[in-house]
Length: 272
Image (cartoon, rainbow, N blue to C red; front, side, top):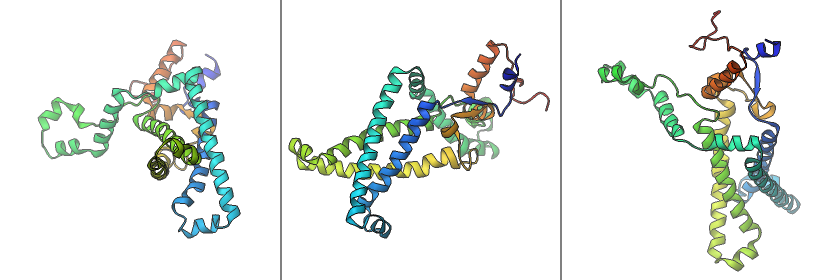
């Protein structure tokens, strides 16, 4: 067995999770999103002193609008590229298939909630329904479900971004080319687009700040930041703990190549 193969058994060995194309897409999305928020929110909250200082002059307000449109074009271009990526590239097809919601994701969401809620374990500790839980230990939810390459939270985020991007692009174009919009549709359609665009932007901002930032970067497992979006790598230990089903496939692949994972059935190093 080569030294490279032996390194695969190390918990700190890194394997690819995001390829270069996916990392670039993530960075472009992040940059365009930040610029869109900074240049879009002044229209919603211009009474805030901060925005008045930043974009109070005619020149700065014009630059704000220009940057907003440039970043919108970036988002449109990224969306088109992503569509081609998931349709025509091998990695893109695998990524998209892995992101398709399955019945297991709904079950995982339920089991995850029940695990953290701990209500059934509390009942058992109080001597309530003890016989039922002894015969049906599943309902105690003692362990988290085994997540695959992408868990239900990551899939939800992905499809939220897809839907949000579609809505923002559609309503944004209607507002950008207002003359064309009102020449085809009643004026109320334009007004509805403005409302949807505004509230979807607020929703997206809150989702990123509250949901994405905590789940990916600020949770105790990754704090202060997950580096996967930069390096594209995940350690064997992280894969085993966060995506056990993918880890099991990884181990099966090693076994087919004649490499043992060096662990017993409980996932512990036999030397410990």
